[in-house]
Length: 147
Image (tube, rainbow, N blue to C red; front, side, top):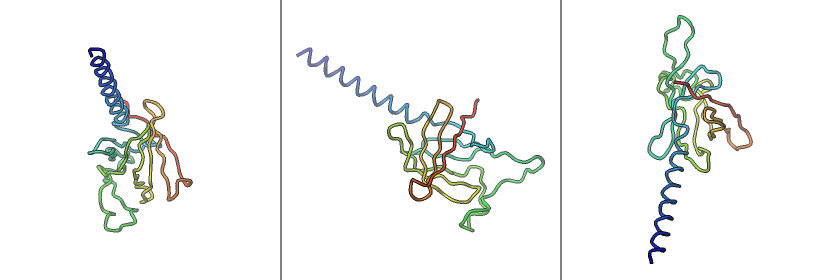
């Protein structure tokens, strides 16, 4: 009887340990990332059961302190909204090392794309955007901002 109890405890500990590892893996992309051109920083955070990303820094040209607005958005009513603080990543769900089922908004084109993220190295995040079907895509790498 004691052997059965010990075996049950070991199985329970293993299952709890796996859940802890899965939660840690899911949160590995949390933090601030440079876009490919290093002209913006996006903070990725957890929001309820999904990951989202907000613009937290945009590089300004010398002597131009004007805040950036969403001037190319296809929805003309949104063209005056500030880009700083704008959620550009949303709906990302973690499964098997990939954050998918999400959407990314590109403020340079004013378009939204289906996207997925995958951590390539500790500080390199692969961002893949899909236009319509998944065979039309673009992949870029973002680098974690060093503190």
